[in-house]
Length: 252
Image (cartoon, rainbow, N blue to C red; front, side, top):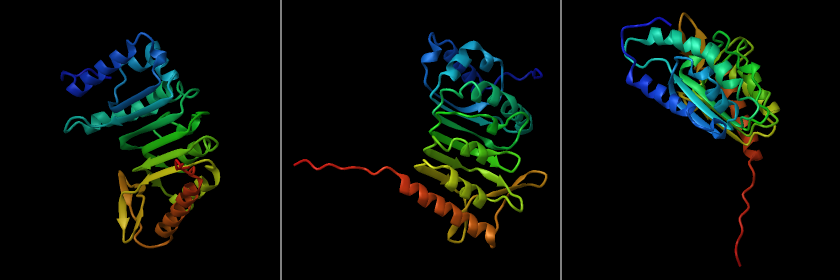
């Protein structure tokens, strides 16, 4: 990373102080839940330290989100850091070390995350994972996010998808994803899908395509919108049937 004459932002100073406090914990392996929100995508060496890795490798619950732009006019610079951070640091310093112990994972950012560099979410497996939240992760044929979700089908009980996009092909739509989830996620009891675009009385997830930059593509009519919405409704209905019954007792 090139040095600049500008001093670090207040946001970055706070982040560095918080991480320093975390890594100075006398018994880092006793920390079981960690939430890091609005991370600036700068790897200053903290994440590879033994203390930080000790924290990550013993976690039960990990939640982190990143930001790409912290000052007006700096988006391009921070996008380079953003891509590098997700392409290497996230996989090597967060996901891989946490695989054996993690039961809950939440990850995402303010920019859409596709197959960036070495970031291959499907290369990870968390044998005890029961809860998963993904935000602004792009589903595509090459970026096997649905494969990653499905490989946790034996344990996953809660799934939340927020503002995710999909890079469609002629044979890959949201309906394909929802149908696979309905077949493979056999113990799922809670499904939350945040849908941000509305067409008439139906709401559907945005489609994303690459035309020089990321854009949203909504199909006003046709099989895509209707079949996607129908497949999601069927999946949600199946999940609702699996919810554990609440047993109430009446004292005499």
